[in-house]
Amino acid sequence: EMAIQYKKEEDFPGWYADVLIKGQMLDYYDVSGCYILRPGSYTVWQYIQSWFDEEIKKLGVQDCYFPMFVSKAKLEKEKDHIEGFAPEVAWVTRAGSSELEEHIAIRPTSETVMYPYYAKWIQSHRDLPLRLNQWNSVVRWEFKNPQPFLRTREFLWQEGHTAFLTRQEAADEVMEILDLYAKVYTDLLAVPVIPGKKSEKEKFAGADYTTTVEGFIPTTGRGIQGGTSHHLGQNFSRMFDIVVENPDRSVTENDGKIHVYQNSWGLSTRTLGVMVMVHGDDQGLVLPPRVALQQVVIVPVGLSKTEGKNGEIYDACSKLEKTLIAGGIRAKADLREGYTPGWKFNDWEMRGVPLRLELGPRDIAANSALAVRRVDNHKAPMPLDGIAETVKAYLEDVHERMYEKAKAKYDSCLKTLNNWEDVVPTLDAKNVLVLPWCEEEACEDMIKEKSASQANKGVAEDAKAPSAGAKSLCIPFDQERFGPFPDGKDQKCIQCGKPAKSWTMFGRNG
Ligand SMILES: O=C(C[C@H]1NCCC[C@H]1O)Cn1cnc2c(c1=O)CCCC2
Ligand SMILES: [Mg+2]
Image (cartoon, rainbow, N blue to C red):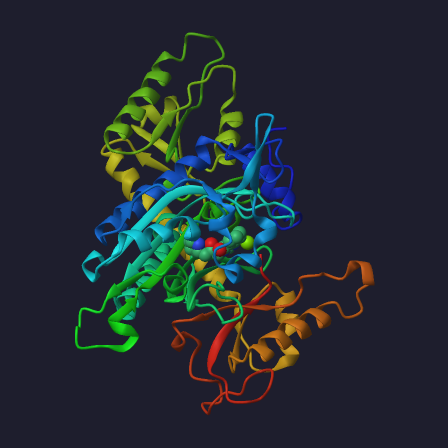
């Protein structure tokens, strides 16, 4: 079948899988939870990688590579950090026909791999800051049903691990990195995100605090964690004994030693899933121009049936392709024989190419091409004179339109509430809640529990939605956007009635 067989709003999982396969983003693999990244998706990851890597290098971060294997002893170094996750760790137990004496874990993340070497390499405060990043893949043997890009047993990511002399330097870097994550989404993927802080309950257990960029999937009304930047305080430096002499020799506390202050930060191929889910439509992928493998496809039209009569049109298409490529545009003329223009339109629409230029005898005579915009199917003639510059500006406009469209949708689904009656209906209407919250975990738990039970009110036992409860997504840094608490006075926590500490986003989680 050539067309997308599912409607996005009717069968989202079916639509998502169909769009990824027919958009040639990935293919299935016989090991459950693993997928093949085809050029259409892998090149998006490469654009993210090259942009982000250039930015962190400006900050002084250096790339490196540690082994993917972790000894049992090393992995289990800090019980509490790992025990919650132990079921997800994959192990190598045999090589060929011989059983391994010591079972070896495959990294699920690299703290326990890297930090013993931080302890070894950091001797003096002059060795600080140490700021290393890895581009690699990690393995987490999750048992919840896999989802391409969003929950896979192996995924590509970058993991940054930095160490500083002072907490302030670390705190500053946490936010610098989070800002880069936000830009990956807004500037490369045209996806709006909200930066904020995770609650104590939702943060990474090994961190002092976790910051996040929260995305939103309108079709499900669910939030999605886009990337996290953690301040680890001295939690890991105490565990791994990463200490330096206090440069201030007069300080005797902690016998003049300082455990370094650390951060870790990660962004994964989950970015690709969010991009597809936010922008895709019932014709298939809609790719943001800045990361699209093909930005423009040129399709010859008005061809004569008899072979050999179309040389002039094909030549014009090839010439246009060369002109655009010379102008720095990723363009391709689709001169494949034996496929109708309509077939080609559909194929490139499924693959999400941002701009199609149709070129036929009438266009050539008018020295123009018909420009068809993928995001909204807008059509208009585009003069061939100066076309490379025209297309460049046009693609920038496409990016802005895609971002603004997604941002308007996200904003329209952020509902500021301060009375309980509206909570479940608003969640059921596929929105994210912005609630006044006292920041006590007990209330966070009650909000999740009550919103789950009421969402299942009157629902048959076997049909109850297990995850219908609203969990806290983040405490947005920008509190002002949600306005002063509604009645001007101190707003009450929606759950306990005590004074609220912040507006907090609560939602069902993707
Ligand atoms: O990975 C992190 C923390 C940190 N790791 C480095 C990148 C940033 C940040 O994600 C949290 N975490 C999540 N998931 C797992 C682990 C884990 O530590 C360890 C065991 C397997 C599953
Ligand atoms: Mg996990």
